[in-house]
Length: 559
Image (cartoon, rainbow, N blue to C red):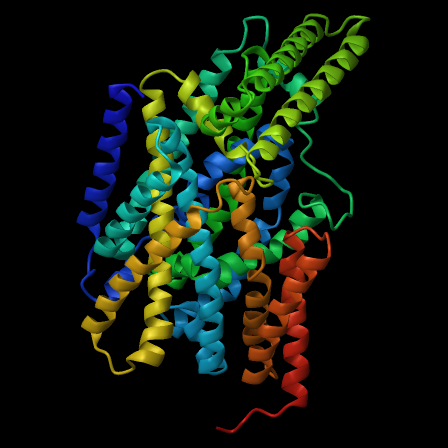
């Protein structure tokens, strides 16, 4: 990057940290450190909710997802508005009125201590893994920029954010989120404008969309009832509904956001704000992925976007690698010529023939790229290799003008730091209130809780760094983080459904229902091809069913 880009990145990050720490109030008490004294306005909480969910994963993973798979991923968010409306009438008022620090503390009031501890444990595992994925996304970018190994950039991002979170608490996190969202939206709009300006003069936006449609990248709704397909209308409207209900209603990283609001009504407004702004924002991010796809029709794309892996593979067998590069380049040139011919003759008698020719060239190009990635997997003995997370960073670094690169990198880095800090703060809160205060030091004073909270923040930061080192080649990071969550979220949601709406449910039913739900999801994921979003539905209903059966047939121990 140019010196100007580095100046923008460094200046912005320094400002975010300084301003966040300046605005953090009451941070030297447990109430201030973990809940911000319940003093945050609704718009701050709403933006923080969006920023915590977004992170750098969305900017990197979703754009790469759209490049490879089109707009189908937008179906994932169809259930979000309904989920937020439901939570506004259930979880938000229940948690807020209970005056709890964590969502799982509520379960002790409703059931017992062992149910609280078990749900806390599963949250810590799932969110600890998720935090690692959030760190991995920007580490991919920095490794490209600096030419360093990914593990080095993971340590730099993870530990710097950990120390920032230890110092500032939840208020510093929330106010950083506000500035993060502003620069992300501005950066995305600039990216759209500049990308459109790079298209050949004879290619309009309308032409580009026709090309994307011909390549089946604009299909947004899939009505197939196929449980093995992750992104359909039914998985988005039903299965993803359960994921969002669990994520925003049972995951401490989100619950903690609206527990910081000034009132119940402001908590509700913040959830609704996130519900109705998230889908348009996600559409914009996916649309950028489509524009990148079109851009590489008229500008030669890398055969392998991960340049470090590409260099290592080339060094092993240069001759064969260069043959693959030539085949890839020929396929690109054929596709480029076919696309231009189709655009030039739209509306003429030869349109259909040229459209068929373009579609064939697109299939040939995909085959050439697949042959190259298969060879990389074989040579590097890595069946999980996938460079989808490198597509957007490489595009930005190679094609954006000076200054814009720095602005977009600042947005991605700020998104990463803000999301990681939110994750770490929620992990520390749960570790302190549900584990340390509950089982290790029940008589601990405010100073003890604050000290342990900061220690827990540091330890979870280290854990997340280790996880990050193993996830960058697992595919689209936005899919990876949702897959991690889907193993846990449905069963956790089932426990809260029992707590909120099943008066006959008791502690034994909730506890053992959760265990059976978790085991069932693991078995189904291991021995079936059902898409991960449906794990949330399965885990929820099994937990509820088993919990009710046990509650009715087995009496609760009086002790």
